Structures are given as structure tokens and as C-alpha cells.
Amino acid sequence: MKRVLAVVFLIIILLAVWFLFFKTEKTGNITVEKQATTVQKHSSEFNAKIASMMNAYMEMKNAFVDADSVEVKTKTAQFIASVDTLNLNELHEKDSSLFMTAQQNISDIKANAAPILKENDITEMRHDFSMVSENLYPLLKTIGYEGQKLYWQNCPMAFGDDKPANWLSNTSEILNPYLGKKNPEYKSAMLHCGENMDSLYLK
Image (cartoon, rainbow, N blue to C red):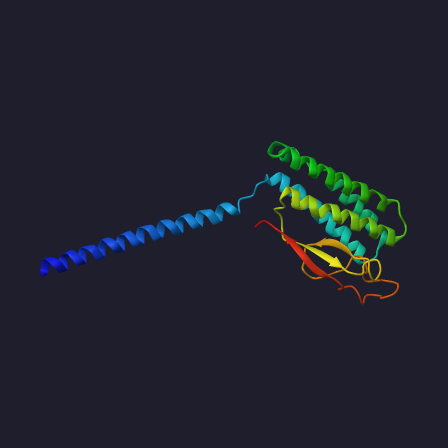
């Protein structure tokens, strides 16, 4: 009887050791896997340039919220300068087709931003800003954006009741750059008109 109990006790110990060993090993693998998914794909220098560009874009967007056409031009010039500092060489080394797509996005961004510097009608400026945004958003998706969380926002009546427009923001709060604080018709009543459609961040 004692021998049977000893065998049973030994089996229980072996099962406990096996369970603890394999459970720990499995948990360890899961932890490593989760860490691997948050490793940045781009260099710190590349991400810093993207962050600088997005900061300039946010300042331009805020100038539109304030309906300050002089400040819009100043911030747009700074935004274009920040776009010019982007170096896509490391994208080319990884994927030439991705590089070509990003280059086209950048070309379109600059082509739509440049007219803002020459225009005096803030509504026309806002139309160009909407096109800048429409090309900036896919650029960030294409390169695999790794910066602070951004929100892709939409106003369903940016240029009229049935003419929506989008923009990027670094806050989930809606501060509408198309209707803004000084709209001739709505004043500041439509400042918060819009909704969050998507978000971008390092996952």
C-alpha cells in the first residue's frame, strides 16, 4: 500500500513539474511575440522627420480652424519645407513599389499645398488643404506610420450640405478646419461638427 502511495505521489509531482514548465514556456513565447509586434520598422531619423511634418501639418490645420489666412500661409510654407526634408531611401531599400507610391503621395501633397501660398480666398485655401489631407493620409498608411496617435476626421458639410471633407488631427476632439471659429454663416456654432473615421498609430 505504501509503495502504491509513493508511486502516486511521484506521478503527481512529475505532472506538476511538467505543467509548470510548459505553461511558463508558453507564456514566455506569447510575451516575446507581443513585444515583437511593437518593434518599429523605420529608423529613428525617419520617424523624427515624419513627426516634424505632422507637427507642421497640425499647425496649418489649427490656422484654418482660426480662419487666419495670413497664419495659414506661414504654416503652409513651413509644412512644405518639412515635407522637403523627408528622405525615403530606406523605403526604397525595403520595397521599391512602396517607395514609388510614397513618392507619388508626396508629389501630390506638395502640388496641392503650393497654391495655398498664392491664394487670398480662405475657402479656396481650404479646398486645397482638403486635397493635401487626402494625399497625406494614404502616405502615412503606405509607409506604416509609427508616431503618436492620429485621428482621421470627417465633416459631412465642409463645403455645403452635401460636400464633405476630411482632415487629420492629433486629438479625438473635433476642431473643424473647414467651418472653424469664424464662419460667415454659422460663426463658431459648427466648430465641433464632424466625427472620427479612423486612427493611425504604432500597433
